Length: 330
Length: 164
Image 1 (spheres, rainbow over the protein chains, first blue to last red):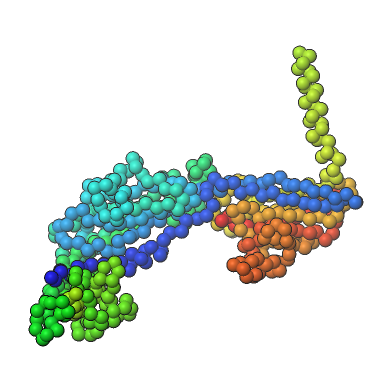
Image 2: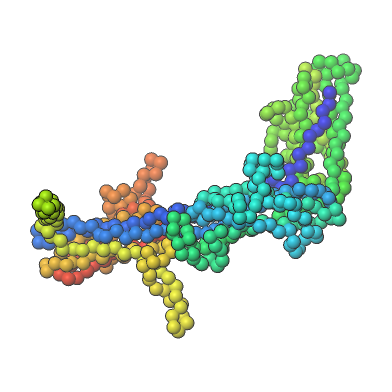
């Protein structure tokens, strides 16, 4: 009758949203566009009025070389010895014309406790858009399939590393993705005559024509456990599971090990052929309203009946968290 | 050979026919537009100064401010009166507020190319409500010169616009 509670360790979900709101904004008019100016004049000489049109002055918009790389997975929880651990990056062409970018990754960076070992290959395109390394994802080969991005377009790139066996709890390992415009990069304002889109000049923009972002792996061997128990109370004072009887569920959640299980969410489906008893959800004996509001818990029937409790960052020091709710048998 | 000559004469006649109306007009005011970009240069004293270079000779990228100058030169022997220059803000560009200049001219603006009014007096309808038009919404600039332009003299209007 009882189902195992499902856990969703939503590490970094909030940070991810932050990365999105910081989305790169590309600049306006496309490279190669002609900006024309023609004026008109009317005047009188004696009693005769006349009109004249000026020459047309034309200016061609040059191409800006700009790239922004943003990290989509701020901290990747890993265990020592794990292979093919991915970081998700997004490369956006913030210039105003189509541009090809060269990609590079490095995991030999200072400031961390271990160097992740780049897998071979170590850069993939998230070809299927899953946000995960899957069989359909195409590896990046420098000079062969450098991404060509239209102005404002982006591509999702996966950086893949193995985690050394010797890494211990709480250790961080950094890895970085760099993208550089093929036309050129350097100090903003540097120009490349005739090398922009449609034969225009290309000018290095404010990003220097390249972009980079650094992500981290965090070794954490925390395990979240849940123990579920139930007590049946029938309407005749007994404990038979008959229609109309009530089942009181108690789930004890605890974390063991080092590190933190960030943004832990307890999710439990209401068993088939039962109905949730409104207002019975509790966390550590404190009632939680059924509505999705300021308190940690809520009950929803969409898409299927379930209760949910946001447990936040759980560590071993957090101790056990006791969740209770009740259903009646239909 | 004879046929060829006949064709040549015919072509010459047509060319004259096209040019004839132009000669009939009082072609007194010649209008010229130039686009320039301010560039910072270091002079021989090591000081940073700004100089104007033709926009066509420089790299114009989104965000670049172009200084447009439209000059009306009176090439006739008589003075030209009631001189009115109209210049649209070029497509893909936005007028820099307060940048319009024209000595001896009343400057008006338009958002639709039909109604012209001084700065601050133009209105636009936004979601059914009427409000003052913002400078970046001005699409046309008009200079009405108060005095006639004497023979051989020039008058000019100038504005700055930023590439979108």
